[in-house]
Image (cartoon, rainbow, N blue to C red; front, top):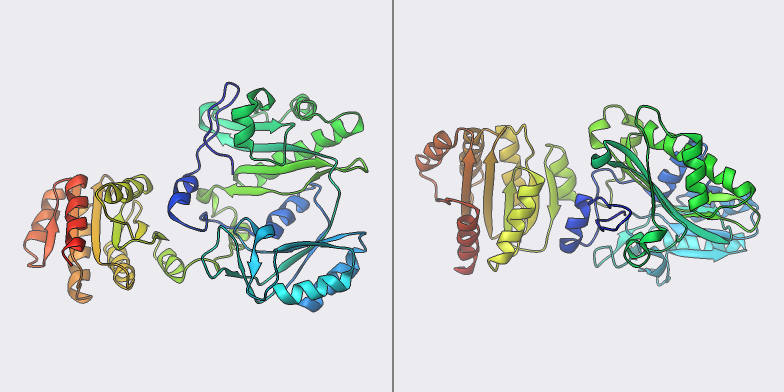
Length: 425
């Protein structure tokens, strides 16, 4: 994923999921698409990808391999985590990506993949169950480049980013060879121009007939970017084959969640089976939850404030148990459900509520807290820091509740009290 690296010729934009990588094993986005789903979107919009089929059984994998009639076949386990090629199955098979020229071998490999857990550096310890495999035509790559389109707030619109040095981490290229990073702004009203696409193809090092072919693919990728309300389409490698074909060999697509109402078919493809059950339960109530490995539950409104809360707990010697974001238009019932989720986690030994009420009414939070404490018979220490809209009424509700709730004057105070409550146990 395109990350935050500063260079002379470009700025990289920081995706919030990067911040989560330090505290979770599996990167998560609010919309997760498998590789085959992303490639199907690309193919449906005229972008050149490898021919492929998807199979959910060994028999289907064999049939797919035979239908491809390819000189060589690549079989890829479909999970959301990266590092599949170096992963291990609990069937004993090593590697989630295999090359073969024999369709029968595809069948044998699929039997050791489908229904078994694949463990990689980015999965939980027990791995993730593989339910589908992608059976694709294997193509040789004679040259690899990097290409991406993303939204840039500084430019108030889309920007193309490319490098003739692909197939590696683009962050490394930006640091070691910034002159090999090319950036081209696109006028959101005019759209991508032919000369812009052709210039990017030249910058990527495509020559002769391949140059126009690459430019055409770039324009189709831009059309895809707009059509599906993407915030980023990243292709690495964007390569050429010895036979003279420009192919998108891999793709990562980020979507604008605010466009879900327009992209119902795409969002319906979201594979939530790899999420923790508690995450899926939280999503039912519009709560954004990410499980961590600590024992102090965080109950916060706003992603930035949630990350700051996790950080300050760690700085004071504690360990956050989760990242739970209430969001903006919170209702009392959501507060109750949030507490229900947190108290159901056996590793939670304390709860820290940190609310900054801008568009959130603190009194609603306070009513939800007191109701949850009584009905759920809360048995772990609860530290509450409230600030903002209707905070005085909220404090009155908490103070008159008669419940063992510890108030905090600010975030630092709240973190110290939460960590101390766990230490006393």
